[in-house]
Length: 80
Image 1 (cartoon, rainbow, N blue to C red):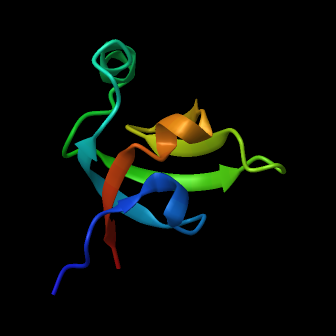
Image 2: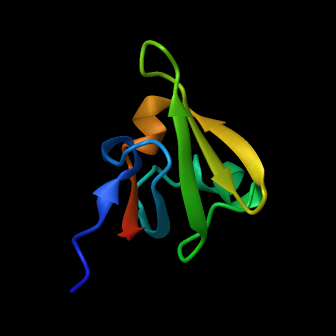
Image 3: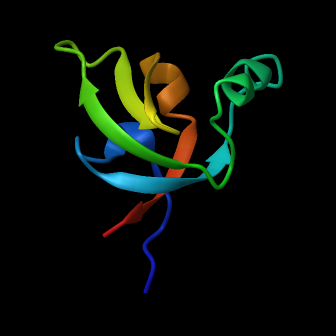
């Protein structure tokens, strides 16, 4: 039984999942889309910076760094 989607900031480093929802304002979405972060994209949380911001994820074969407030608005379905 699949679990509920979680914000990227709530998953453990090393966890993988699929993006199910992006709740960012319309002005922020095109930048993420250009970088390949779309609904249905598989992502892996690589690490948090020492103070928790920014968050590093792996998406489509490269590492991407997001601000914590952006990562909180991206929901993922964690893959066991």
